[in-house]
Image 1: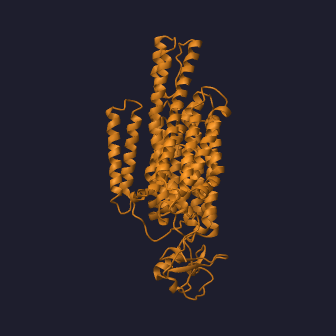
Image 2: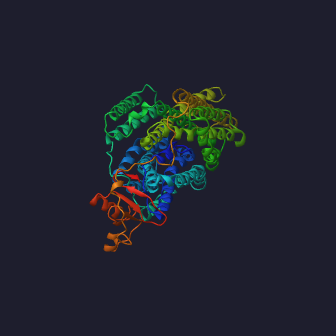
Image 3: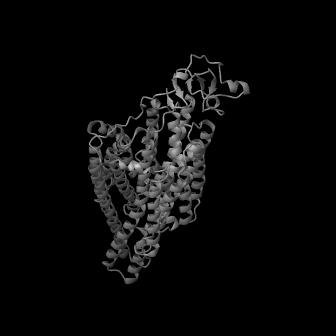
Length: 617
């Protein structure tokens, strides 16, 4: 997303994944490293663009509409395809889809780095979004499959800590590259990162599969959601070049909304929907997602316009612009664990009312600075307050989503909530971009008309009012006239930003009201993060007093292959290698014999796993 905070329920996706015996201990370390790197690459794709937008607009001469597409098309593909891509990984292999996503991201990032114009960059960003949609859900799935639930908490904590560092450092790194080299370097940086991650994944990471079922993929739902969202965004962005009543705006907008309505109808009739409609029958789940939509819309909208204000009004470099986000990211990272404890003390409802209200107060603080002033007295207080509000909101929001549905659907519910957050970011860039441009254009025209400048200069300035601050002072202006025109541009951009900040505050307050109206005082079920529910296996009667038949994997010893992590069949004593190995002989033995229960033969591990019931025994 176009922000420096992850979607709210990434941890929920991990915690809600099915139980698994995990992979070999040495392989788990590599899975953790690779998923951290992969998630960081995808996150950098969305966060670096924050600080690069003004430089991209100036270098490519891109229109505001093109800038909106450059900022949002990546999120469009993520929002529409992530859920389907997760099912695709379950069917064809998570590692395979993860690797494919990394390869696509590497190629697309190189393409973005050599883009000759706005259209080229939009296409490259769209391909990046497709690669990210393959990468993100399968990165989370690899991590959850590698660690049993009893060990998953520490892995999630490590993963969260490193991705929080990415959120804090990504904009600064991107800004430094923009200043020192060019905005193109920010995209080229991602190429070696993606390729290194890909090489480690292919060399060290096993493709651990959970369960026997290969879920159906909701292709029609994915196509309808993608096309519908794209048409809606196309229609909204079209308003930057024409009026809202233009056919070029209304036709795609109506067509997109119609397709999205068909998507909702189809999901009620599809056996395996990518976004199960019955989840929204829970008032708590519905309210949590409405809160997510409103707050993430507000956050993304203000962060979309902020870099233009910092660079063009206050003269910040790209590096300074990236550093301006640092207090926000650090506060969320440091306070997230403390904020999670608020759920135990007060329940979910109070933090999810207070958090958005604090966030709204921070947005209003953004509206106070004028065209001058130190960062510490202008934007720093706003960043701190918004960071505090989001910290109070995000952790309880994750727990609320997990608690609103049955334990078996926590992963699906968390994925849906993440998709809602991405749709909010997508719509924010489109809608706030139009609002900001209209306000800036009117403010600039009004201020220029009030100046004592020749009509020729006035007409040149007004003609540039559709550029969101990227205005060139006409060469024929005197020094005094140039200063007056520059002040008019700065004041107009400040007025535009203030309007967006107030709008964001109202939306955040609306999110708090939605929480107050829909959420229960105490969730119906408190989500257990890492402790699996007591499992019942119907096949313990097939467990016999057996001894391992060989000192290693029987099939690997026969063929001369190398094995990873041994399992012994508790029906006959067969010793096979686990799914971290190339040939997965333990699983093959189950398919051949239907002997369901195995035990780990690794030192220090005593777990047992039932293939038929797909649970720890």
